[in-house]
Amino acid sequence: MSVSKILVVDDDVTFCMMLETLLRKHDYEVAHSYTYADGRKKLADFNPDIVLTDLRLPDHDGLEILQLVKRDVPEVPVILMTSYGDIRTAVRAMKMGAFDYVTKPVNPDEILSTVQRAVNSRNKASTEVNLQVSEESYIEGVSDASLKILEHTTLVAPTGMSVLIMGESGTGKEFVARRIHALSQRSDKPFVAIDCGALPRDLAGSELFGHMKGAFTGAIADKQGQFEVANGGTIFLDEIGNLSYDIQIQLLRAIQERKIRRVGSTVEIQVDVRIITATNEDLKQAVLRGDFREDLYHRINEFAIQVAPLRDRPEDMLMFARHFLAQANKELLRDVDGFAPDVMQIFKRYSWPGNLRELRNIIKRAVLLSKGPVITAGTLPDELTAEADASAIVQPVEKGPVDEKPAEDIDLRETSRRSERELIITTLEKVRFNKSKAAKLLNVDRKTLYNKMKQYGIPLQ
Image (cartoon, rainbow, N blue to C red; front, side, top):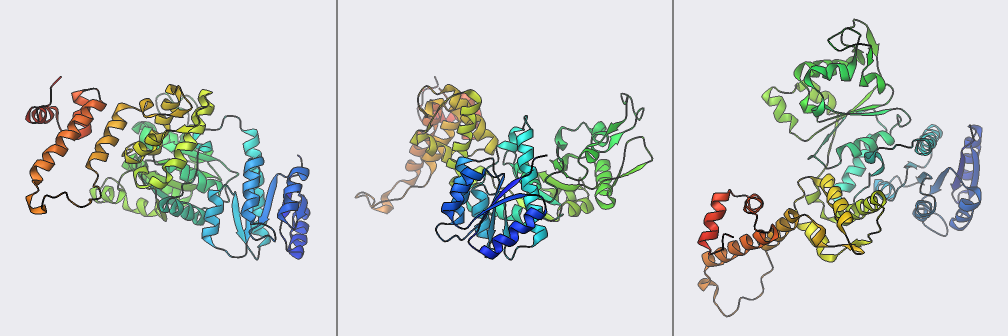
């Protein structure tokens, strides 16, 4: 096995020598630089596998080292060292692509553990050819909600706490779970994701805990359950509220006693697994209804993370859109440069019920349909543009001085009628007068839409 090469960039000579001695003692090859300029040169000459950089350098900010690495050798993990222990700095660094951060004075065990995780991450990325899309498409946003998620994942990841991730479908709950695993002490062990909503009720126990040959019809051989597969690592149970009550009992026992029993077996198997769960429903209400065990709820909810829907994070829209555009270009072998200005306005007005998953699919479709250098409104689905335009019409606008007509003479009812008529016409035009689609977008039934069209003199065809 080749020796991993580490570049240390820090202007504290004594600290640099101490760190170099520590790393060499654990069989790492080390080079050090005291300035950004020399670090930049060593990056090219030394060709490191890992970069450790201080936040404060005499000639540049350590974050500029991070930017340089991410631009020139993005596969190289960067660990930031700071004397300030400021979570905001960590959030900014992680958002820019840092692998992790450590605070000074550095704990030898902590720095060695972090370096080893970075090496494992680098090796894993180099050897795995078939990466899942969800693993390679995670990016951070810049909104307050996104920064809060990053802050929470950074804080909880190194612990062994069970985490419950809550949010609507498509918001990226699995991405958050994978990030927690990647930043944890278990990052070099398996991450196993299970969609509990897709588990057949009668086979859920077998899938989670395994079974013995002959345990039931079709059990033609012994089978390892996913808890055994994830042993030492992390198991992610998505949509955990879909598990049946009897499986909830078995899961609670597995969490409490760290033991499982395969279906059809009397032998207990010891497992060491961190539990991360996710749901798009209100589990508290499920507990009150008697559909979800209260003791299990408290076991999986040692730390909760709320993932906000995309419509509540407009500041993130452009960043996510550009990311998915780059993905689509790569997958479809296209070269679309960006978005027409009106497209981003449509994106910001649309409600995104499918959240990030829907945004990714719409951009991929638009890239396929694009005939020019940018994505235009004409490549977007009619339903999306119709809803966005309807939203624009009903948005409150800043009022300037009212013409000469006194406020008391304004006919509010007539103004409302005109706005409603314009909204119906605009929606119909966008869906090419498909009444069913228009009614759905306007949140009325077809009969109500027909009556409104007759009332306002809008042609029925």
